[in-house]
Length: 270
Image (cartoon, rainbow, N blue to C red; front, top):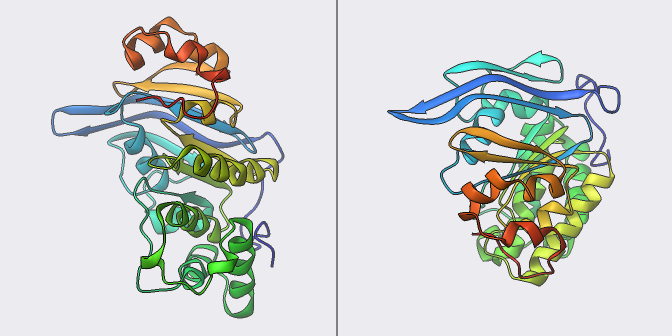
């Protein structure tokens, strides 16, 4: 089984059809409103980027999509099915994959075993099919040469690759990337971006939160800016980065975002 094949119970929508929709999603932690009636539509095969200042609610948004956190109000539909009250494990089996800002491998297991577990419990495959899927994903993410290394001995870049591989092991239809470039050097960021570009070219739907803006804007079809629990801009990367409100809330009105779409490696947003 290849890394893009799916169990028979995972139907695939027509290309370009709406894969994910959020309607009126709200969330409070105590008195803090972190999501304020959010509306979001993501098409099948689309690559969407999300930027915003720290504390804007970006990771909470991902947690509500992945099922790690339940919204207080609103509806989440994935692949035509309402999943608002489903937990993370159920959504993973339906095809929602996610990475975390801080990689969470099983450190006492090998790289291969980490991805094998994802294939077995995320994609729902067993035996030789699970092993073949794990090996295909390791090849896809450049980890095959270190498949037998324990995860606890990996470098940061290798851990980031493994985090991505674990998400792919579940055979997602939707991949949520949460600041995967954080903490990496410029060459390492470019390596990881190359893997993500290949995933995008394969037709995988991607939603990517990132502070390394110059990489994000050349990797997505559409860019949104989240601030104060609400989307304040939605459009092409060029349009959003030139928006006066985005520049004001994201960088205090500075000029950095206006040129970041053409910047080279090393241009990192705060």
